[in-house]
Image (cartoon, rainbow, N blue to C red):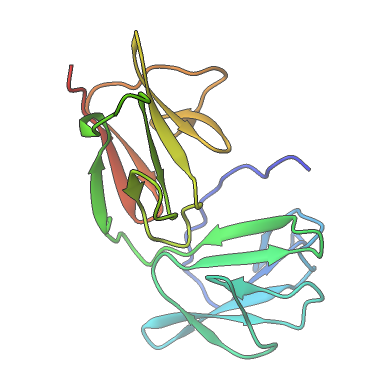
Length: 189
């Protein structure tokens, strides 16, 4: 199944339903794992909570299954996932306001060893460990080439977080968000 396009939804009115049925008050997610009325986002004081509305496939937050019809508070950067039994899923990252990145990584200043590559991801074996549930275990790499450095993400090639048809060189002083991290490319040549 092809991936869904990335989109941003600003939440201003609560409650709002996450579901596959495109009706008023519903953020429509066209994926077979998503029920017509899958989950509800609601405001509880200063916090936002999610409630699984009894969906067949269930809902997880940061890898933990939600109890049906029970509110679960969301923190900034929380990853909501709806999946089928085969592992096909939709991932939603909850962002609370205009929060600042928790860290900044200077990609061009990576010490690329004899391999000419540095890896980024959650796994401790990476050259740059980015410990957050929205980051894959082996999420990306920076590869040194004769013409410059290339940032490659495991789901395709991206430069400054725009998909590219083929690998392209990174541009000086450009930034890319990755979960709560800010990746900045600064050439050392």
